[in-house]
Image (tube, rainbow, N blue to C red; front, side, top):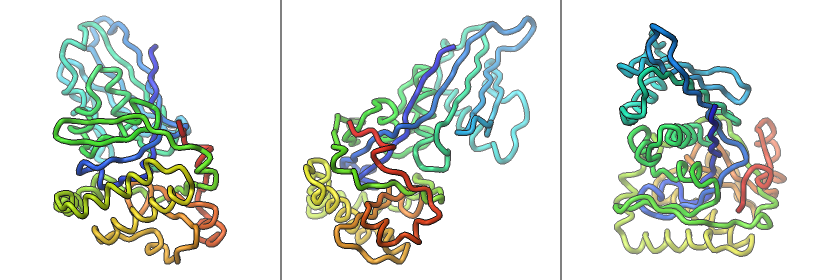
Length: 312
């Protein structure tokens, strides 16, 4: 057996704008997804087969598929609810060179999530990173063909450290980044329980972003705000930059901030920001917000940032 691991992710700043070449600041979390793999002799008179099973965070199967390696087709009927996942898996297999598959050998793959796949922490990106490791593929090419998007989440799954990510016509780029845990002691992540498809959400605003990225004034403002987050050495600068970015994007793209969505008034020295796609998945809040609006977060899963996020 051979095992691979990829951590989940959080995009702290640069949501949406990372799609059009601006920097994004992302960090891995302390939970992720595993891939266990076996390559074994196909039984006599049997067909070479790939057996894939996906387990959730409770080690319960949520998807499984058997594929004939001769034809790269399912060996049994696929239900309508599993079809999209099956199609994605089969499309990924078409990217694997034929030379990878050895005649007379079958493969068993089992992925094991450590977080809820609807949490927004990166079940798709960790899947891409893991399968790319096993099949020896370029994960960013796999990501582009299967899901689109910027690929920052796949970079996190690869590097497993905080990074600055950007993408331009020359390709995907990233470099190390550090966010001191002393700046995030009062931060909490709220798992909102409403899964947002970030790819659909991104597609809805990308046309507007493409236009804005060519405007020198807007570009300078965005780069300045992002640099404040990137280089922040104190809590006020860091938190103010995140709130500034959120307000700026809200005005430019017509998206609701969490204050608007949840009918909250901003709090002095408070921080309340969507993490990733706006409208669901996760919120970043600081202690001031939790204290001011306890009823809003009463029935939500709230965890301390420093308990979940890998800072360096």
